[in-house]
Length: 158
Image (cartoon, rainbow, N blue to C red; front, side, top):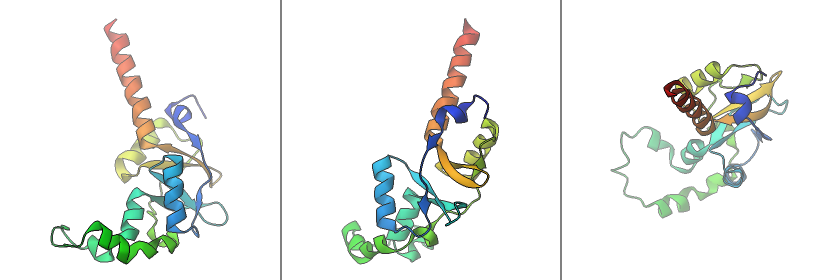
């Protein structure tokens, strides 16, 4: 892989399995301080992304997707957790974001930027021959990209 923003921001990880349960998967996100992790099938191939948004979709009742606003739902968060707390035992597979956003090691920074722009994901999984082994977070990519832009403006002004 050429020296790039990807190289500067890539983070080796162990992906989640589609069979992992929601509770332990959410705990792993918290422990690893990541907004999301890729999930893979048994053969290591990309299955989707499980993260903050996917966790909330599992916790809140399915009808929340169809509401224009939650203003008419008067239930407190504690009541919702009490009613849906058992969702932590469900497997993550049915809650994954399945947009095909995995990139192979040789992708360019521009291609990665396109994924972040068009898919609204917080991470981009990185694979070697289809097997996910790393990720780049949108936040780290942004900081590295903005740093290059700011540095080039400062260099141009001198």
